[in-house]
Image (cartoon, rainbow over all chains, first blue to last red; front, side):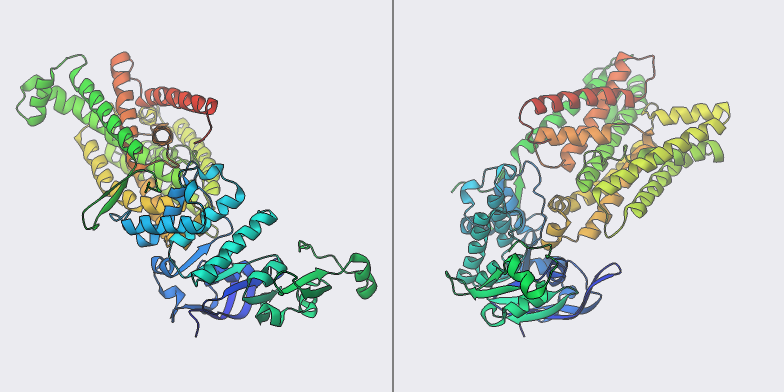
Length: 278
Length: 351
């Protein structure tokens, strides 16, 4: 069994059921990417994996025990989560924000050990924000800020990291920068990463394991991107007719949506999916 | 290697203990304490019967002579201590709630704790016709019930700061209306004593008020301090705080209850005093240049604000018997406006 897996989850907000009978396994040491159309329950699944959302039925297992049986602090020492939206307190410096990641390791009268200092410095070095430590977070660019948040999660010193859409709101160059950083953490530090991404091509390029979700929270496919991504799967899940070719840079699958004219010839008028930001 | 975080770190040799202290916060606290001592000295020594510091000290240690003993231990000291403790309690209550709602308006006097307490007190004065103690209990109940109502109405999948504040403002208006109605239904004598209570004052407060406020602070402030680390983490948003191992729901519940009880005890002891809970944390936050109001600095600031305000109305308008709220409003309000104005003219870093 892997360190983190979920069995027969029913996920719901109040009465609105997002997913039923959902079982996923996060391979140890993988860079797992969850993809799927809008509102298919990607982020909800991630929240359940991180114990942020209590499943109605079924359970998430972490290191051999139900995740709900751990104390919150203990979970935070084993598994880190970068939520979609985090608020940087106004007037906080980069160093102080990254230092907040040490919370699960600190106590009331053990507020800043030399280990805390070393870990925070190392996390900032890894994410390339050490020089910024005295700057105010408010003054940073979006890409820098995201690296600061990543540094904060790294300072938690967990070998499993869950990232909820870490590239949203970033321009393409900063998206690549953040994903390269994630790939480094995966390769050099042997961290297990689970990320929700919108861009299929980025998912195929960076992910070593994909979980493809259908609307209604059903798993359409999971496995190595090169093995599972086909034009049929993309059309089936996203309703987007396309071709899948080899990425000229990496050889991973590259999804190229069909041109509008060709699409209408092949399939008649197809409703353009609202999320066409490929 | 230069430190990556702000503030000073104090560690014991084997690092069994390590504490982070922000130099600026520390300085602000020390200066506030010094100012507080000055105000206390002035309050105890000046007035209709000036006393020397020696006479005051003698009275405090129990070796003073008749007149000094009476003036210090019966008249001045209880009033001063009530002002100090009530100010600290109100400010701490405001600091917690403003931090929790991430909103400077999330302060007990704005969202109806004080007026809710007043409703409870008025019901006792006018409908039941109870004693001072029963009035205090009525005020406590009023504040707690108001807070419960706000909590119930704003609770859907956790409490959100903004909704909490808005519903509080609504309930505050409701409580005000009920209060006015109660006064119109009262006979003249009850209406007068109700009005006197409503003004909020530390005039004529005795040792029983000091004891009640001190006990409340002694229990509630350490509890709040213990949870203030969780409160600081919750600034990052509920999701981040949860992900970092904070028991968000429980911490929030404990902090709200602490804040309500602090405001309730303060109001029970001195009536609804406006503005301290709103202004003191904001003043402290701006002076310490931190992202959210600190508990200790806010409490000290509240104590100073109320004690200085009370000294001011005693000495400047000795015959007018003004309620202390007017003075705290003037002092704190002017200072806050000055701070905000100079801040907006400079760089709006902490707005």
